[in-house]
Image 1: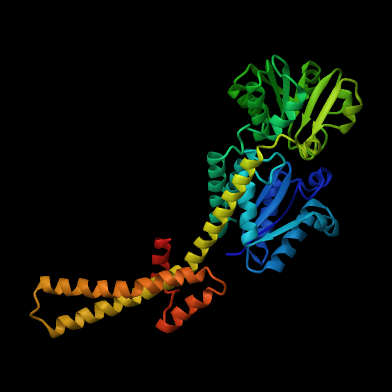
Image 2: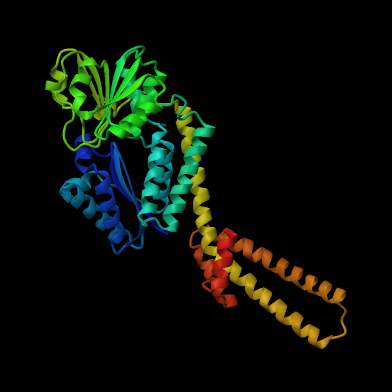
Amino acid sequence: MSILVVGLSHRSAPVTLLERTAVTADELAKLLHDVHQTSSVTGALVVATCNRLEVYADVEKFHAGVSSISELLSRHSGVPLDELSRHLYVHYEERAVQHVFSVACGLDSMVIGEGQIAGQLRTALKIGQANGTVDRALNEVVQHALRVGKRARNETGIDRAGASLVSVGLGRAGSLEGRRALVVGAGSMSALAVATLAREGIGEVVIANRTHERGLHLARSAEVPARAIELSELPSALAEADIVVSCTGAIGLVITPDMIEGPVFLLDLALPHDVDPAVRELPGVTLVALDDLRDADDAPAASDTEAVRRIVCEEVQAFQLGLIAATVAPTVVALRSKAAEVVDSELGRLGGRLPGLDDKAREEVAQTVRRVVDKLLHAPTVRVKELAASPDGDTYTEALRELFDLDPKAPEAVIRAEDVL
């Protein structure tokens, strides 16, 4: 297994470039398919959020994988490769695992510790599984990453404040008590916005969405008075709103200066952005967009962040040791299988030479012989697992196969190794 991560995020690229590389649901499926079809890739999934676009792949060749994925990201986004490559980061093998684990914990988020990324990572895995692009290696990495994220949240205060882009952004609007809010969109970010507004004591929420049924569903689930409207009613709803949160998947602008009639606070979490930046020129209008949240100071305590980093390091080491054990297991199983065959053969010959041996004595002899073999094999099998974790550790496994003429690829060895793991 060779895990590769190629991507860009708020840490490596300006929001203007992230907007140009943003993908819709249909485009994501096409990108995922194209990555998976490249000759060097055996498994793939794509994480696409408002502040990151990352391809996770299981690759046979590092350079070929990086080149192919970079070119595909350029082709799908329309951003020239020489411009895009300056903002791409690449992580491979152990560093890739560490990156995925850090992402799942919220350490790499625009708002450190935000918990929404875990759900986005889980969604990316489900989309990959549904499209048949996730192989066993990628599944293991992401599933382990989700467990690491859960452990970090359970054992530390990394998300004690429930920080998210929504809560941090709305925190700049002042008190929300009794005010009127308009949420544009009905996706996961909009649902989080409605929940956050309710928690902060908003008086009423209006939800405008292109698909009215989804807006109705979100309104019904709200814990405050809420109603859904058609997107065509947006101008009149804007006139009545004190707070606006917009996060749609629209390609063009959704809210423009001519639609705003009075003082209003706008939080634009869409990528590409929903709100025309020109609204900032209007009197009484405040616009907070993703770029304004890049340097948010709503971070958790340094001690919590450091504790999560330690957890990530521990889990990466455990994961890597698990990979080593997985490579050694078929050889160990093959050795024990061969030993069992020799024991059974010799016990059969003993029965032929001593036909008068009663059943009790025969069983006692068999158990004694098997105990002797198990004790003889215990030390070398434990030691080869330990040595496998050292530099050039695979040479010890190879030596064991050579000395005992083992075939770890035999079906029974592989099946039993999978059972052990």
